[in-house]
Amino acid sequence: MKKWLILMGTIALIFIGGYLALSFYAVKFIKTQLQSLMVPGLTVAEIKVKPTCLSARGIEYKDPHSKRRIFQIEEMSIYPDISASLKGSLRIRDWAIHQPSFFFSRSPEGVFVGPWVGKEKGDKEREIFQRGEEKRGEPIHIRIDRIRIEKGSIDFEDMKPEGTPANLRLRDFDLEIDAIRFPFISSHSPIQFKGKTKGKDGKIHVKGWVDIKTMDMAISLAVQGIDVKIFEPYYQKRVSAEIESGYINMESKIVVEKRMIDAPGHLEMVDLRIKEGGGTVLWIPATTLVSLLRDKGNRMKVEFHVKGNMDNPQFNLQETFFAQMAFSLAETLGIPIKVVGGDVIKGTEKGAGGLMEGVKSLEELFKKKKEKRR
Image (cartoon, rainbow, N blue to C red):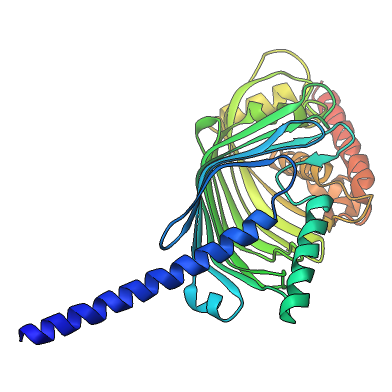
């Protein structure tokens, strides 16, 4: 009996030692690849090769030109699949990113800056993989079973809206994406996102799939208790009355296929407070809207359905959404949509310009309705 126990213990030690040795080899392989991808502006305070994972701490990237910080990561852990490493490919079972902070911005001209791979970095990556292909006779393929972000934050400064820039902040968000391959291939990668923002227990939840190569997607979006004032820079051109406070709940099914978006859903306004006086809210007289909200317990739900080609210069996602909201509010107020703008609201065949014509017609109808009451 004692001999069997010694034998089993010896086998276990050999197995564990072999596993740790292979894991160590796989982790060192990943470390070499990561070091070869280092670019100007990217710094890493510490990289440790552990028996089963590669650990990196104090990761930060600053734009080499503006010196502006783009992202920082408290800690990152990469767990490789050892069997795949022995076959010449790289498979990562789990890639955990702890407490990252991402910083995005958009210039008044609409140019985005964010933590994505730029042209310079992309060229260097291609060069590295080409060298690997020449040496091995085939490119290095990377398969990632799961990427997860824990307790992250996002700050987005948008200077494109006229007037005051928009500052959107997400806190304590968790993100999980499964089944990713590099070089990218067209496939459905399950995605799940949960985050918090300013508001009455403001929450955002996204679930569905995304094709990382084509950016096609099918997701469900749920928003709860978000402060309406966050979006003031976007709606200030369309609202002449002063909105004091309020919250938004929203649900939508968003499908993007070959740059065509189809997004039906509904939005609920809760505890919307509008300062007394004149003005309009989405081209609707503020006094009329306040009265309707009071009759409905200060809660109002409106439907929307945004559709269009995002590559069409005439299609403006933001304008289309606000126009849809205006028409839906009009319908709630008792003005049939078919009266307003004809077939304009049916799709977006006429683009944002056609929708704006319909909205102007909507404003005129409210004026006529008011004159009739007199």
